[in-house]
Image 1 (tube, rainbow, N blue to C red):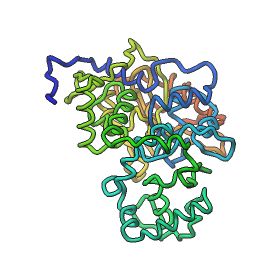
Image 2: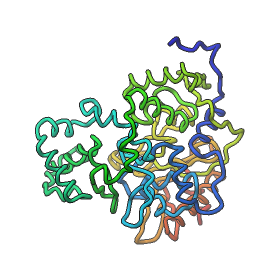
Image 3: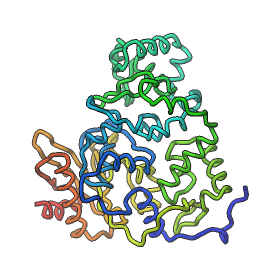
Length: 411
């Protein structure tokens, strides 16, 4: 397909593109006056397409915060129930899989990722490929164990954890690798999580029969649908932005985006200051103003692709969890602060549950921001998130160029 010429493209100002992106991500309307229902939470996640999981719990489990950021205080057990987490009565509408990273996705999206499950050689990590090549009987035996005893934890395989290896984030034993291989290939699923530990069971005990019996979708058709979901969730995006949403192979991302452009489902646009062509989801809302106030987890789909964050907001953001403490610039678990349609600052947060306090270990304003205004709004958001996390106090440390104003606003 011939590339769109500049004269044939729509042109968007950066401010307009930012508002489109924020509205597409669920920031275009006020938070509800009352705690959202499970249905409202499920509809938000359906709009986003993906809710990324992460094990770090220094402030809050990451997947809880995007819902709060958009809908305000809510009962986290409602998200747990539709995600299949916990031990109470479940109303499963979401399932785990490797979508962006480890993620919660609507159950209906799971069949669209069968191509990834089938393409172990290109999509899976080295330990999975090696165990399938060198120890297929271990994988088969682990599947039999799940069938007999599931849902099971990784420890139930009886494998012994190897000694820690410097520089390795995950220290999986063979039983865990076998379970994760079965999970990746779609033979087992996450039945639930207890204290964030995944319990594995046969996929036909976790997913509804109609999902498992759905007609096969070709790889190209499935990837096109994933790009549609990404396009709707991003509003306006470059091809790498769209492909990254579900971590598509780059060649596939380019091909699927071109096909959707040719079919009229994505509109080529040029965005002020962006060096590459972008694509507009034609049904995107284009509000004149965005009145948002939210803390954003590092794994929020609005900001998880750092290049896009810089293009949209002029905000350079890097997570520093794995950076040695002495080399961190802003802190360990730093959350950007969205105010209006702009990222205006960042805070390093920790929940001190024994003390009952939300600790602000550093606070920085974005260059050019009205620091007094930002501090007042950030203080209000910190008090709201602390109350939601059942913490009684907000304590601001003296680190960062916003710390003084923020401490005064909180205090």
